Amino acid sequence: MGGGGEAVNEHDKHAAPVLITEAAPSYDDEQAARRRKYVIMMSLRLPCLVLAGVFYHTWWLALALILLSVPLPWVAVLIANDRPPRKAEQVSRYQRSARAIEGRSHHVIDVPEQQGDDGSSAK
Image (cartoon, one colour):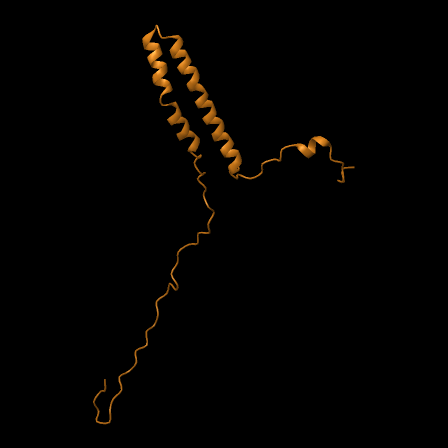
């Protein structure tokens, strides 16, 4: 009998909710992801400088590692400050067909000119 009223076990209480919408991630989640990218990129700089010191006898390799580590802070800041692009949403709007108010021709009634007492037309 699956009539409902079943007990909720401990696993169900703490499970992450199912995402049923196409809503963007929260600002806190987005910021945490950007902070994680920044830390990863900045943590690559120190090993590059240490490896440049280790390979100082091979001058071209040491120079390449130093040149690689120089723009890393700038690139890390740019990536960390960049928010992901917004989703292109197509809004569902009602589109009615364009039509004229009335499509038939109209009979125009002219007002006859009034004649004065002397027989001339008055305008």
